[in-house]
Length: 212
Image (cartoon, rainbow, N blue to C red; front, side, top):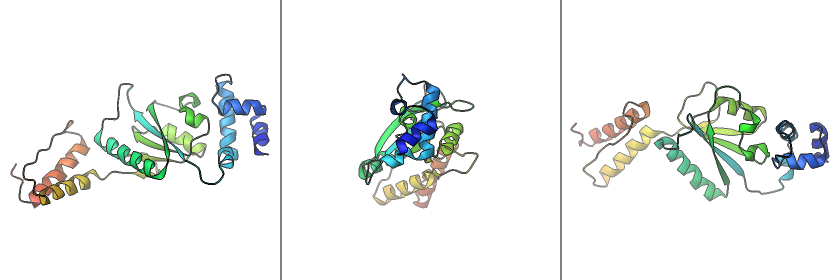
């Protein structure tokens, strides 16, 4: 069967396969990676899933520094949407904080869900780690970038139209009778904040309510 074939391809015993796919520290990291790659190559996870099953999706919050948090408005908005849709669809979401590093990503840096070959897909938020994405492409784990950041090569990406969102929000508030507005932000020189301010001002000018 496929389990025995997996053991043969990885060059280990069936018992080692079981422990490696549990990410057991009793198995060396090199062997765990070899078993993982063999499992992905043979489609072992897919073969074990019969009929309807709950998807396991890893959401990776990318950070540039160890102290960073998910505090940027665009990413927070996207995360709220992901969470809501996961609840509606019965999808299991596993969140992971990932510190972006320069150079190739190592197997030990991956979330346990991925190392165990229990992940059906990955969503990237925040700082995008291209070596991480390249690894996922290599082992055929589907992923999508849910962020407005620009990347150097074509990938599946979902962007949040912040300008349109602010513009429609302001038009709705004016239509409902609101008369006094303020725009408060941090990092006024950030391009994304300038875009939102522009949409804010545009909506108010069209409504004849912008005087400075």
